[in-house]
Amino acid sequence: MGKDVIVACDFSSAEATFTFLDRFIGLERKPFVKIGMELYYAEGPQIVREIKRRGHKIFLDLKLHDIPNTVKKAMAVLSRLDADIVNLHAAGTTAMMKAALEGLTREDGSRPLLIAVTQLTSTDQESMERDLLIDRPIGEVVMHYAKTAKDAGLDGVVCSPLEAGRVHEVCGAEFLTVTPGIRFADGDRGDQKRVTTPADAKAIGSDYIVVGRPITAAADPVAAYLRCVDEFVDR
Ligand code: C5P
Image 1: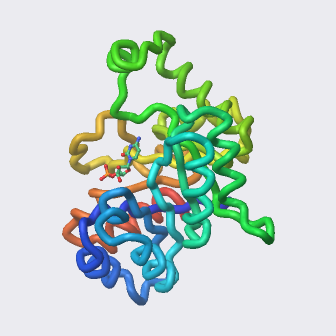
Image 2: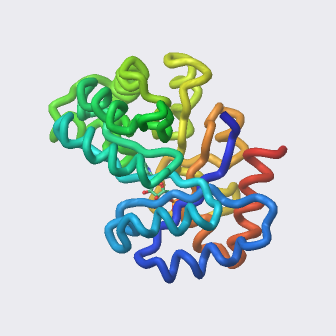
């Protein structure tokens, strides 16, 4: 699996998304695009088809979490949209993850990659203990969820770039790490707390970096994207 930069298109309309993506027309490399809940709920499945039609790969970041039968059926629908990566919460348990894989798999045996959210990066040790009654160290919990996802047959996890090396140690080099929380060395951190640069994420072993505001809010988004590619993929 090749390393790539995934651009988080956190926009609330198709119009804003296409105004943004139009800037990249003519570039030799088509950005891999992440569609999250905001854009998907605003525009529906058509937004996936349209971005795909323009030739972009898509990570559909909808983080499913429900009973196995419901997730299986929802994944079968998402599979027909031809996204390249989809995801769910590992907290839905092994049965849910296995059902998701079944739902995703098309008649010819092909399917999008399926990755799991372990613990959200917005969850810290204190809130995990207080609200979820999980009292083990959060790093151990993340690795346990990653291992559960691997054992269920999933392709990887969403995690902090700081955890990517350890996930590969526990789950193997082929198990994908998709990592948000990326900032340029001279950039604004915004609300992200534990961040790394694209170059550091590469050194630690991330397979895909997910980059939102450092690209979408840049004065020159194409230059910011190419800087990520230069640091993470090409250098
Ligand atoms: O703008 P920024 O680069 O912080 O965007 C990161 C993207 O990755 C957002 O779409 C955010 O929802 C997503 N994400 C994250 N942390 C996670 C999971 C997803 O920042 N643990």
